[in-house]
Image (cartoon, rainbow, N blue to C red):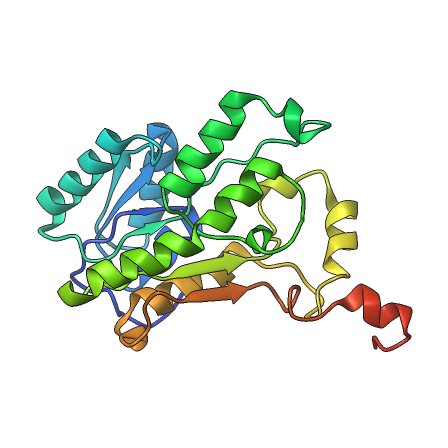
Length: 237
């Protein structure tokens, strides 16, 4: 648990348990949101054990009315909406060929991951699979910059975090695959949800007061260092 209290008194709508936990620990007043209300309630209950002001609220980031309702709820419950952190995303397995991708899957991925303006991914710049997911993540950089330009005069900052592989529930039962992926990371490990939460907390805080329109890559060096190429040349330790 962190001793920082950078969000004391701030209303902070957030999706994603690790991000919610970090911002709550730093004093944020959270409507913990999830498309599944029982899941949001479980997150809120766990966070309340740590003492912060947390409420559960159902929100589908792919639905404009649902997002507006969550924002209104945050203002009504906590008096302000100071920080927005959205960790929602949609990722379906690839079809055998891109033209076989179901229309519904493609559209849902764009609605949640792109239109919902969520956390980014290294999939934005390289092929790591998942056509719709990669396209949606690639699209997030542009609205990050344009929204930052539109909002700057009002003192609002907009930034993007791009994770690499994260050790989440999606890897349960796939430990061997995760181990093989981990070997490709210069830092020798995949990311943890807490790594992303720390990056979000930094960008959302006054510590990043002069940063807007930026993309912060949190990928353990994956996209900066080609470990496979270096290994082929015998250069990796």
